[in-house]
Image 1 (cartoon, rainbow, N blue to C red):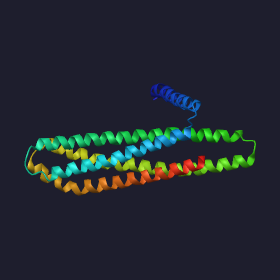
Image 2: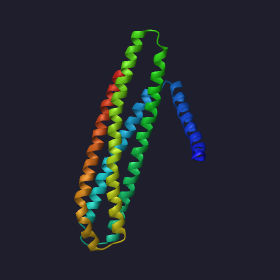
Image 3: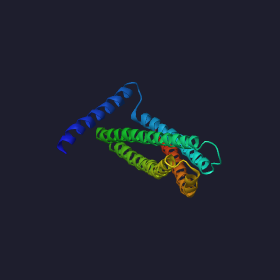
Image 4: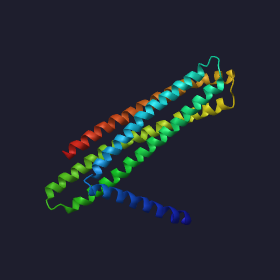
Length: 216
């Protein structure tokens, strides 16, 4: 354990230092953490919108497997496998974008909190502190929605993986018949995921509008 900490801790500190330098560089040209946060939330939104389309596409491909009626079964399998791989990539992109949102948000809130001590006017300090707490509460609601999306992705990927693996080793009509019972579950999981993503996207829009309103 000690050796692990000795290796990982310097890496964490290095990444943290790199992030800090990144924000400092942007601030020197007039781009502050608030703007970076908004940009990253919009990037996360885009990833979730792309994810919605990708998982819908994977569901349609799974339906085409279930409704297979002659032709080259291996071709149908390869298409489904490609959709699964694309879905994994979409999930990874969503996760990365959410992590980047969390990173800059933490830096923004830490800076905001530290700067409260610089106020001379107690009334302005209290008002700024109130705005900070309100923004943090709204941000926490947003992150819950985004993290809920990530959790909802897991069963969809698990189902797709199971069905792809099963089909890979059983390329025959009997295997197709066995998978028909899975369609209802996959369909429900994908619909639940698409709805969760839409909720997160809507929460993102609200948070961005409120953040921009706070800046006005």
